[in-house]
Length: 270
Length: 238
Image (tube, rainbow over all chains, first blue to last red; front, side):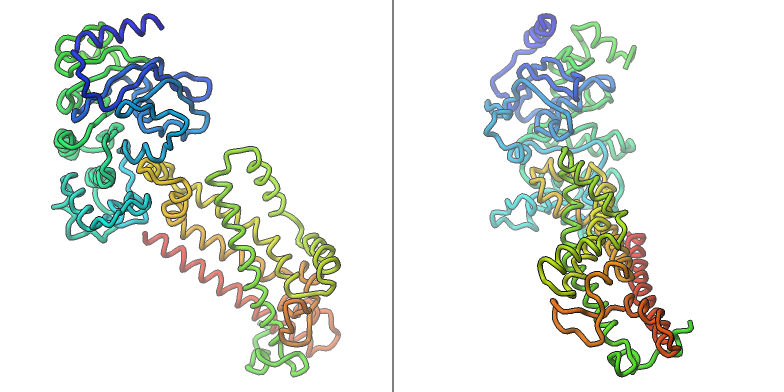
């Protein structure tokens, strides 16, 4: 416990933290059954920036971001303790409806998962339709804007009626990003969004991620360190369920404070 | 095939006294309709509950009971319904009692196939919807069920085909009738009963009538199976 806190203090010290925090986790713990997978995570996610979470497999990075929109608790036997603040308010308060949180904190998954029975258009519109948040907005316009933001519009504009699963994997992943954007969330969580994609599709998504931070706060999990250094402003290194080091991406990659971090980013283990 | 020479317009539409099996065909179709009306919604509801909300002790019990019911001897279902509905509630052999008995056979099969088809829908599809902030029930209704649709249709049609040929529960519930439909609370004819009765008769002409009825029943079940084929071809294309 104490050692964790000191690690966190170091992280805080090396990076001047401004008050522009979109999300904060405070003493966050998470379990699958009896197994604790996150230990006392204190992490700040800055607004309109890309925060990358890196670390070896099984270190809890995915679990961490699933705690940020309360998806973790959907797995049977999973539980959490501690706080996660969204705009300063704890999303784990009793009266908070997780469904509402997930509308504000969107998510893109590791494997592209467009709705198999829906067309490209319906996939993007699904969030608005199924949550009943159309609010008289022009659906066509929202779909177009979302696909444009996801840099997919030019490729699919003539095939909007085709099934969402008929396009390539990289396009499907951008479709999933468009689907998340359509709801205008405040934060977008991405769980290794490129791990199932080829390099060209990956490059497109990376470019898109950098563009997204103008309007959204992005948290991206990746096991690809080059990707973290290319797209993120801040990087957090997780190991065995603990946050080892957190700071500006440049600092983490050029002057890692913790020997573990250095070993990981130089490829000595992982 | 020995039933083939029997088939004629007269045979299909006349009542028993006119040498036809019209009442039996009508009765079987009514039974299929009524049973589907009662059994399919209940079966699908139970299946959805088991697959999507069934992560608790109550559902585990329900699943076991459902499994036992699936393998339940149909004559026992007939006797039970006879005791509860025919004797205690209506006081008469009746069409509705037959439909209820067949529903007891249909529901567990439909519930089981529904649960199985829903479990085939990958979990990441559910997660995608929930992560958009869609409620669980809406996710089930608008995302999971459509994804499992063809499996549901196939399973349900097969279950209906199975109950169309059930005989034992009908002996105890609808009894049989020489006339066309008299009302839900009256005895009714049905093809399986017709075949069974005719086959016990000494007269050759009645036995021949039984063969004809058997052919018609087979054709009804066959057409349901063809419908299943068409439904599953639709699935393969997707």
